[in-house]
Length: 178
Figure 1 (cartoon, rainbow, N blue to C red):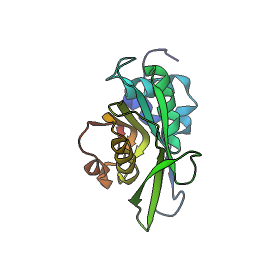
Figure 2 (figure 1 turned 30 degrees about the horizontal axis):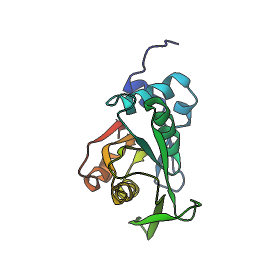
Figure 3 (figure 1 turned 90 degrees about the horizontal axis):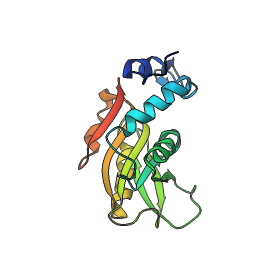
Figure 4 (figure 1 turned 180 degrees about the vertical axis):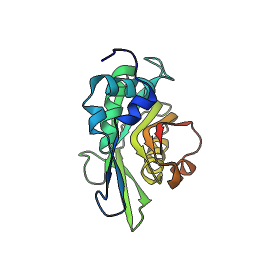
């Protein structure tokens, strides 16, 4: 196998589709083959961080749970801190919370009240941009702390769900778009 930087096509080929998971009609995008290939995983991180130099980002905010994988690796690469946005009730200290709509009902994400300093330069990362609810809630939390989102990056975007429309005020990049 070549040690050269993988193309987006190679990254996309490593994402397998599992029909009817977790329920009928869903075409689940399984990223575990990509994660298990060191070259492809590193290439995805390179591409998610390519607009930034080490030191140009203060923190990488990752969204619970698969977003943590990519955000933590990106934080190391950019020599930045890693900040988790988690589901309500999962963080041990005082939090700010943000509700968002789901197809049926709502959910809540949280961030520690002292996770970011005002003016912090943030890269927001998740594995998947679908309807945009979780990402827009995470962005609202980052803004509530006075931080500045430089970019939101996603491994996968399900364009037909129009999630990008809920994200404004900063650039949005996705590596693989379905």
